[in-house]
Image (cartoon, rainbow over the protein chains, first blue to last red):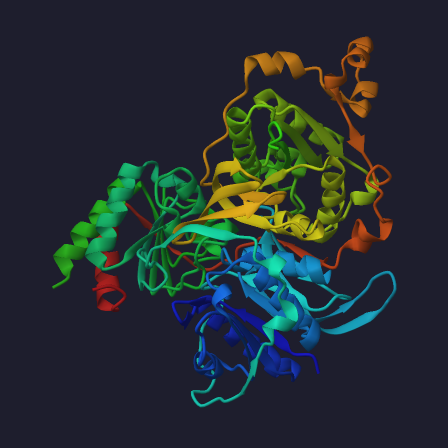
Length: 339
Length: 291
């Protein structure tokens, strides 16, 4: 039986969240298909990394450990991923839609002549019948993603090519421990078998990575602004509301593009996906591009001067009014009524 | 021996402006009305063009060719590039390309790039109609060239290597990579300069053969001036294998397209009146959503 493989990104000795989210998803797909879940970890000084991967359901962990393999560079990682996939013949290969995964996965898919779907928001198993030939396919991976600026939702399949490849952004899938004591097998990748000297063409002249600063993903309250907020100055109102409520400020792509907020605050298909307890959407019209990243929020309040804004269809409370009027009142009445 | 300047190919795509979807963008049957969306130069491809132009500014003798794949009207992208400082362009167009996914598209583009034989290929990171960011890396793989993605600035091109600053999620890195190579440019890179009136005058009559046959303007002028001729390359010109193109060359298939319909849920409607806001905040506090 062909398995599912997840490429695991490692940062300072820790497997990043998106990879653990993919393992969680991969585990449930593997259970559905009756196959095993494999993880592939490539880096330096990552002995013992399997301990972080087994609890999320990995049955087999491939480890490629070499000082030349960190920080990430395209060619050596591609060579190893392609080599392992050729040897293991997985039916599905999953990558995080990060600057690493989005650099690596397309290169791998081209080398394997295998289809890849970027930034999936949902992965399911399903069937397919080819219209022309009547040929039936079972247990295909449905790769579901918004397309065309988020105005349509497309289900993509790869009927005849393996592995079926997909990237998924951080926060889209849930991260959940499968079994604390789930155990599996470690396989050390014989990197000499795959790597060539020509793979190491990149020289790092400088590299500065900051620790995570803005972290809207783990905030239980998010006050988000869209293009309708109107200006960077008006965004200050949202920061004030977020501060009194103990939350973070999020933004739509349009607001980020307009320079009202930093990209790290962007919620949606090309930003982060959030599931807060409370999401207050200010001046956000509600394009699927955005709502794909917040529609799982437990409670949604929309503030918009357009009573027909699409976001209102998702909202629990739809306040029709101006941001500049409503937000200060929310701050005022929160302060008056909380202890 | 150092040669004079560099040969750069900029990959550009004409895309529907999905960022400005108006009320008439959806047809009555719920499908996307492409005709109602203006066709634009893909934004990150303009960032890519600016990086190419900045190399041309610094290294005399550098030439820039815009390569675009699409229907006949995509020649607009080539002219737009020339108005801003590109030297020429090639339109890759053939009915057999229709239905290509990113892999089949990359195959065709890689063959055209090989024919142009550049030192540097620069493309936008991704196109706004698909947001896949796949074509750049896939073209690089098909040509067996190294790639540098998420580029924010090409700092130098010297001694057979390009030095590039990459923008990552929470920081940056500066790498050096031997040429030839493929670079994809991020939206955080400098914006593209605007049109230059001199170039607009020079290239406004630049046309593809197809455009020329359809137009009624001066035919002779174009015959005399080679720089006004935009070549159109089809499958035969790049010696492509039909099986690798279009639907047959595309591993991915679209099984289903759904138009986005919001599921109706009863929202409580409120106004900006003090009573409405106060009772809402009280409710949120009492049910422990906040506070």
